[in-house]
Image 1: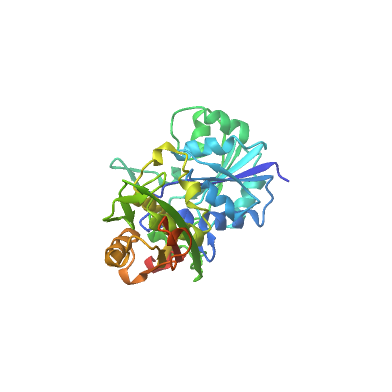
Image 2: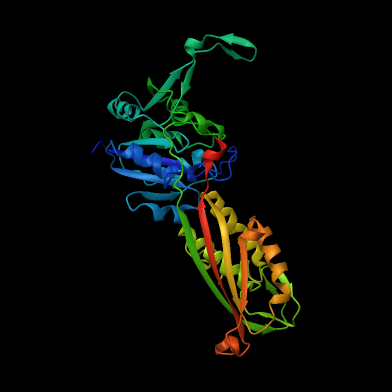
Amino acid sequence: MENITLVVLAAGNSSRFKLEAKKQWLRIDEDPLWLFVTNNIVKDNQFDNVIIVGHPNEINYMSNFSNQYKFVAGGDSRQNSIKNGMKYVDTKYVMITDVARCCIPNHIISNLIKEKDKADVVVPILKASDTIVYENDTINRDEVKIIQTPQLSTTSKLNDALKTDIEFTDESSAIKNIGGSVHYIEGDTQSKKLTFGEETKDIFCLKAPSKDNFVGFGIDTHKFEDNKKMYLGSVEIDVDYGFKAHSDGDVLIHSVIDALLGAIGGGDIGEFFPDNDAKYKNIDSKILLEYILEFIINVGYKIINIDLTIIAEQPKINPYKNEIKTQMAKLLNIPKQNLNIKATTSEKMGFIGRKEGVTVQSVANLKYYDWTKYK
């Protein structure tokens, strides 16, 4: 081993990215981009440890993808994410890269490792080939360096450099700020950075996402409670009882949420919204669904269709079916014809037959977000 930890930064909000999914979750065949980038670096190089720094809302989901890597929640800036990752670095050296730098040639990695003792930080650079103007003055382009990542730092020096509130855009700037030494190696134009989305047309190492479909099943049951409003699919039902629940009890939405999470391998509704958390007391289930929809879009999926079955003796569902369908299609942002609602009874058997509650079953079909359509 080379006494090096690899840290991959994948915690950003993709605020400048113009596509629907977050850049770190674009699927390259079946792998999210953060995993694709990490595996490409690791496959030909030896690291003592590999740390993935992910968004706090996504870190548990990320951990489903690999048992080889350590997953750490990022901060509210690149620098704070680095600080969070550095807490778990116990090697002499640390190599840090951004997931947006998605097609790094292996010779860059091997040269960084080979030159690791040359300075406090080793940095790949490109020379400027065009005329450079700064504040209306033309400057000597031979003195301009275009900085790339990954960068390989001495761990102790980088930790010292990060003991500041000054925000730096890369490790070399932070290390130079405390008088540390910098060694430059030749970078590569293949190491393009995915920032806005349109760069995908120039990044040729990225395969299109798999065409696989994913099926999830959800089921939820609530018993009745007198003197409470009833909501099904975010539609108010005209009865004098509702559902007993920590939230508003919208059993239909809860079932759909579990189906969506099942399709992406994302756990269940209770993991996201615990029923012992006071902030979800009486919450509108529509808000919970909106959160889950944002999550599944962020991590690179699109809904194909939803099929659900409401099992109830009461209330009567047929008078509300079309309104529920219209409202749910709108919430899910799918065509109305891609949402199907069936209603049935339990033939007067069991708790449903005794008119004590309602059960809803849902099946969701999802696919990977196809970013190649926007190349």
